[in-house]
Image (cartoon, rainbow, N blue to C red; front, side, top):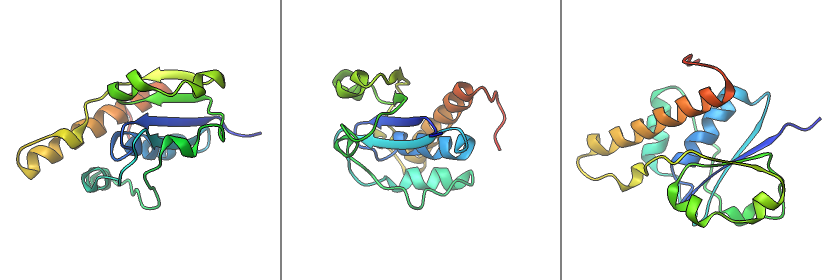
Length: 145
């Protein structure tokens, strides 16, 4: 029996949705197939990779993908929107497939300004918010493996 597919959406698929995909793979790859995409996909932000590596999650093999890669080709069980901009512009094709739409708007760390440490802290903050949301969604409480 196929596992339910979860698609995380954000604007660029460069940080938040990528981190969420990595967390779901870590915590529940036995229960779900995790994917991510962006409305206007760019490269994965190096700070996203860096802050995930800080907690032992390697994002090697992940790449930025546009939502068109999935529209009409995948029927996700869940579409989780991690960006307010996407929530306002979300493709209507996924709701037509019967996907459960979930919104977790988290600030875009790529928009952070300041020193490198200030910007990294914004990525850490987004990472930790996503970690908590996914663990809560999965019913795992506060544990981090």
